[in-house]
Image 1: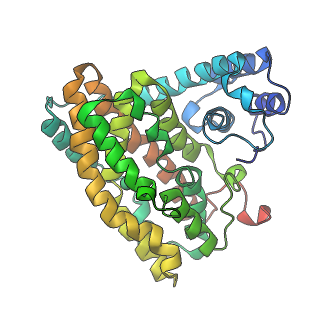
Image 2 (image 1 turned 90 degrees about the vertical axis):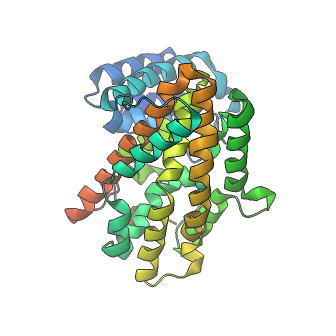
Length: 341
Ligand SMILES: [Fe+2]
Ligand SMILES: [Fe+2]
């Protein structure tokens, strides 16, 4: 991923550190503490969310020109812990554990289906289907590219943390996400193809500088859940809620692009998810999230909370886009023309 431009003192200290040789960087840790202390809303904080995204990226495919040894640099891990603590606290304050007596795998799945169907979301897919302009659907793809170019990877962190029925279920879903072993069919590759068909740059992070905090927080939430074993319940619940709210919206997104005259080269990614995620939601709800909550009752609350947290944080990202568009503004931090493709 390309190294983004800083958005404040913390990301500035981080980017400067990453350009150097791995070693002690107490200034980054101090900047993280100062940023969290000064932040009015960590979920909407451009500096905090960008810094966290870059720190997490060191565990994925890394940042261009950045020494790989930074991944386990103690000061960066300490700084990340400061941001993560504030981030998790903010999400826990925003979203309570859903109140349900569900305990068995089937009951948990049912509770998750109820939770996700009761949540209307901000109406992003309906807007894209019926009203979005050509420029707005491109902005939508740019927002979504931050996750979809690494689609499924955050949930894969959970694989070695699970066992039995839950592990088999996650393998089944992820195998589809990674194209079932067929080169070129990894969902992130399908999304990249959609971007190219729209004339957009499919390089990882090509538009990162344009994407605001709420969308970064949406991606950071998955990395937080995926990278902490103690949050394995939350990442399972997150995936279940994600899959349960994907099939119908993907049909609407595809319809939006067709309404604007685009063909299958653009819509294939969304069309593929209409049927795939109708299957995935069953596996992720019952056999992953449900079975995990049943097998490990101590993470049952986090399974439900992870699902609710996904709905809330994804909702904030959707609201940010819709509010900008309704007001006749761009939902990006700068016009897309500002990026040379
Ligand atoms: Fe997918
Ligand atoms: Fe899926």
